Length: 200
Image (tube, rainbow, N blue to C red; front, side):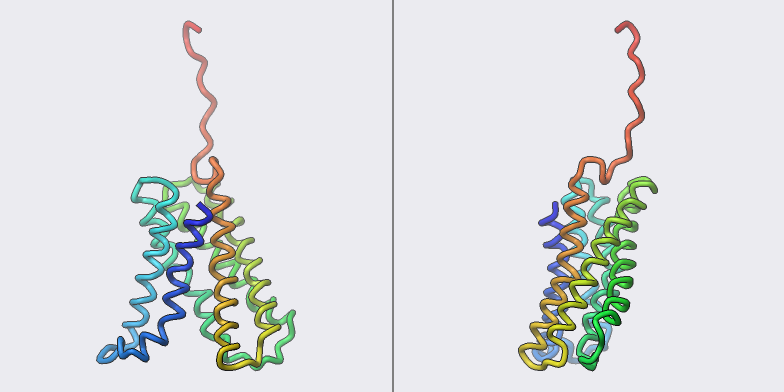
């Protein structure tokens, strides 16, 4: 399941990396800014559906995490898009304060939305939100370290910065979340105690 969630995050991440190339190939010619946005939204929905499909055959899980991906993943990718605007003189603590809480919030919402829409109880959804949020905060720390080490670069190194930062932002927390969801009690409500059977 961890692999399925990592693959689900890889789809919008790869799409985000390819968006400038699609523009260079005139894919957006004659359209508005909504066209690349629509491409990204579809990629998020596809990634969420792939991730949700690992939770069972019920299509509700695919729809739930497809919706959750679309509703929340724009936050980390908006942060990634803004990385080239950094001056390169930011302190590590400033980057941590900027990245970790935002990524924790976005992934906590992703986990909560996905589990609630998938039919899990509120207790499980709250637990999932904490797990997803903690994984997102960890991704924020990794992203801050990558930006601090590679800031101020351009060209190929700048692309490497985006790739490494994007990998930390998207794949790491979703892999951790998928590992947690693979636990038998992660997506199902706790069963009530079995009643004593008559005649036994």
